[in-house]
Image 1 (tube, helix red, strand yellow):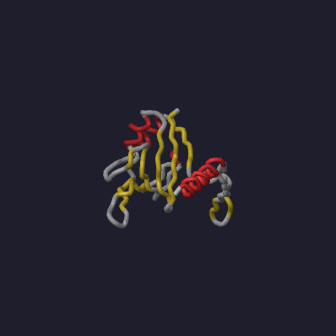
Image 2 (cartoon, one colour):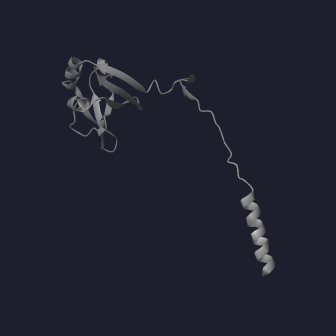
Image 3 (cartoon, helix red, strand yellow):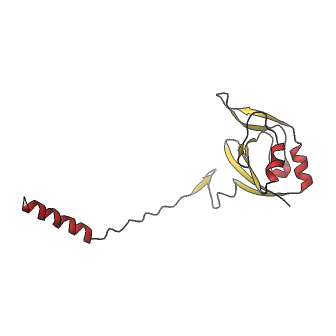
Amino acid sequence: MRFVICFGALILSSCVQKSIKPEIISSKVTVTTSGKEVSDFASQFVRRVELTPSQLERISKFDQTQDSFDQFGSCVGLQLLGEVPALALQKGDILTAIGKKVLKPGDRLTILKGEIAKGETSITFLRIGRVYKTLIEVR
């Protein structure tokens, strides 16, 4: 019995005395589109737009939209039936959120005016299955 206790203490003390060094693993991540490497991959998915108050007023009155539903009948956002050049939005884009507000059935772009009154805001949208974000600021 005494041998077992001493042997256990010897193993424990030898484990404590050795310093365990963490192994650092590095890996390279590459992003490609159409077979070509993209150096700044975030730039194509996030844009920054500055609007004038009159542009914001025109955008908030834009009514060429309809609710968009997925295959299960859940609303995924607000589909544009026309273009909004000031925000670089194209016909067919699906707005999913304005600021932190996720769009629900019946929502319209008038929400943008209320969100931007709080300061800088953003819109999140789907285009051909990819998620994009545009940061908006009124100057």
